[in-house]
Image (tube, rainbow over all chains, first blue to last red; front, side, top):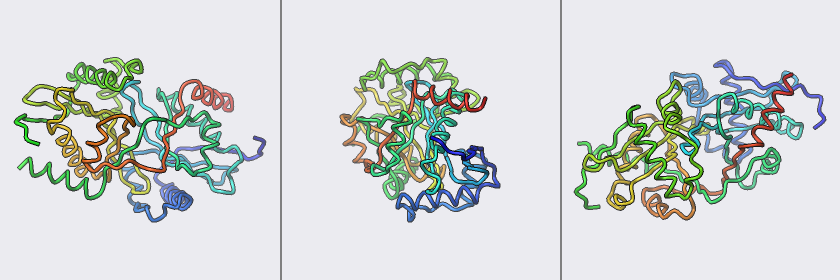
Length: 168
Length: 168
């Protein structure tokens, strides 16, 4: 990739919250999931910089302009006995795609994984997302034979209430 | 489910590490993934009870006998702006399956999710695993349209080395 952009990836502080939230909304729009965003700036602030830190965010700069966001947390594999890096969000503004920024991000995260003794990086991708080609070029492999299951909403409430009842 | 077993689910301490590790190996055997276990007791101890706690473990008891393990960590959804509970391992000894213990575990975790303001519980399942029927009875739904990607091994090393080189 031949580009003259000066790319810099940096950790965030609480003053970046408005910027982080802006990128989260832009990513949701790209994924046609805008109506799924119920988070607010206040919630993001508490989740990333509050008492318990649930995730970490990085800002990607090109020629000192903020052009993207990486948001990740640590997962854990009992079989490996090692943590991993799970990328929850990876977003680059449309006009900055195809310029080698994604590769820089994966190099940065791979280095961080090594520094923190993580055995893997994982993430999920919408089936239709053209970024899959890029991910596979980076060495990412779709995990076969495993399905993701989710329990949420009314069912979660119902089971929780059953637990409460059984305690009384 | 009509069973006279007295089921108790309890958090673990460092003295439970040998038991936790025993169950991890039994689960790996059930999943035909025994040769993937590179963890050791020492590694599990450090990961669950060390300086940085990467995951939490619960022991399931039936009539005071330890019969199962739940190992989970918190993931995070930016769209919800909320953490979730991610079940990495859920194991019940074969002779104790079908006795309502799984339901108790899901009630316990759902209650914990509510206590900790989590919006969802997630986990992955091998496609052939008959436990899928049970998970769906609990209200779990297979997440469609999303693929899991993983980057590990040589590719991870290579990208990390590229990062190091670009820093020099």
